[in-house]
Image (cartoon, rainbow, N blue to C red; front, side, top):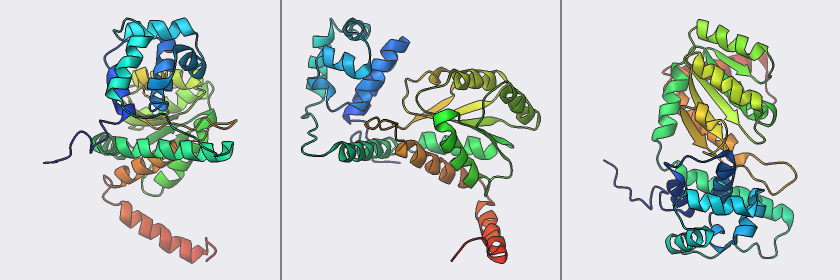
Length: 286
């Protein structure tokens, strides 16, 4: 039996406490956007005004007030007092770092948060079993998430007998889902990153209706794809540059590969066979 304490598992971090605060509340899309922003800026939120939070989240100040009321507080000041009581920390100080260094530091913080979430391996282990047991296995990622889906599929195909990449939208996507289900597919892995294409939401809804179990790697638990996911694994993206950075989702994808391999008895044998054939073909420059 595990002797990990709440603090050991990362359940007592500022981000985790915020996640717990938002649980069991039906949030509107605007409120989910505020919640997502607060989780990402968990260390700073207790020190932000409602105007500052609204600006960071890209919503109106009254929306922040309504959000606090929806959580059961009299208003945003009451919510902020609560956060200061349960999160006794100082706001992060960027110091003299330039914008590029700040982007790297933010991504490092995202990775730390992912490490805290992985202190409880049960969700990833469950995902590994679901992915290993699906023959074929569908992997979906469109637009910004296409590279994540491709990277997972590339490595997964070395150990899984039938991996089918869905990295293009359009009317044929549903056809490919149907074909996979008819071939025996039971699960779909989705990489969902902002901005979230509507066709990804529609594709997951269709996959669910077709009987597939949906495992999703997303930038937040409050994304539009959440309601169509049986198991959602959050991994934040960096937002400090002109285009988002996705180190955490990529690493979480590799963790899922490891968990899947743990549930494929012949994974090691398949990798060794590939190495032999690669050497025979002179595939790699040594």
